[in-house]
Image 1: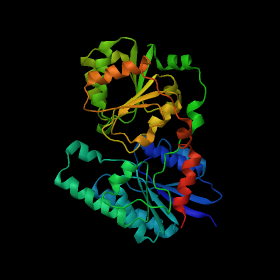
Image 2 (image 1 turned 180 degrees about the horizontal axis):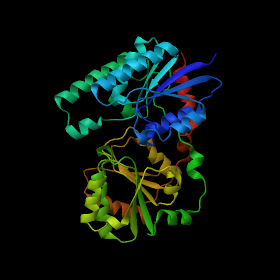
Image 3 (image 1 turned 90 degrees about the vertical axis):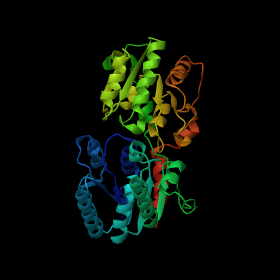
Image 4 (image 1 turned 45 degrees about the horizontal axis):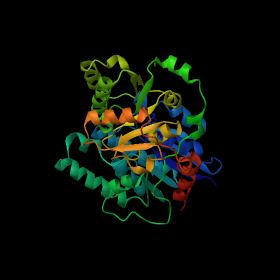
Length: 373
């Protein structure tokens, strides 16, 4: 008899957590598992990868968006009905602090294996608002629920585990804990006509710096804009490629405009050809304020790029071609480091053994151990 697995993810877009869920669905053996993905989100950009999941053979059930108190209550009520009726063997959830209420529901519904997966090292609200009393209480309650109602605890890095399971002894040997987000390695190494791709993208500069991610505070977008503005004053042979969307885009455009370099910035929005865009660039740049792992850093290394990232990014994503830098350094110092890297004054080499630990096959093998009773 097939084991019934329910995976909860708030959206199936092109972020790191979305990719983890899609690739997990892709890698699991459908002769052994019956897989259902519960997706509360109804945003258009959060549904773009649902066709992939359906084509793989998984089922998708929509509940209610996690926006507003009553909508969240409706989602939890619907989730309880789904879990109770379907009698799943495994429930696995991927929305960080809000994993807590989902796990409570799974416990009430009698799901025997309840897996709480941590994908981040900070709550974005605490980054924006600061650690207010309300934020602190919310985090304490959610972390307590995550621990109390789960019986499998996993994460994309040790830092992510420390965030969600703070003050708990989460180290154990019964099943894997840190699960590397699996990627399709060959997809990012597939040969392409780079010059043709550059023409398609309108890239004419000698060098192209790229960042990929939502244009939101977590990714430090205003700092990114200021660093490239400094770089544009140092040299005129570099353009900037930005893949992603977000509510800070207009502010970033204004910074570029004030520094007379907006024409050298290519906002590409959401893309399905990230593998080809990466191969058309020369350096990956991601000075995030926080990250659970930063799987796109691994993707960039697989595609052959050196990476410059902030030193708060967990070291698990480092596969030999990452340079770390403190956010306390000035924008000009970051820009100078970019110069040093694209001029090959700093040379980094990918560790192939570490890259292979990010294969979909390796990730799925680890998760199958977690799913065991």
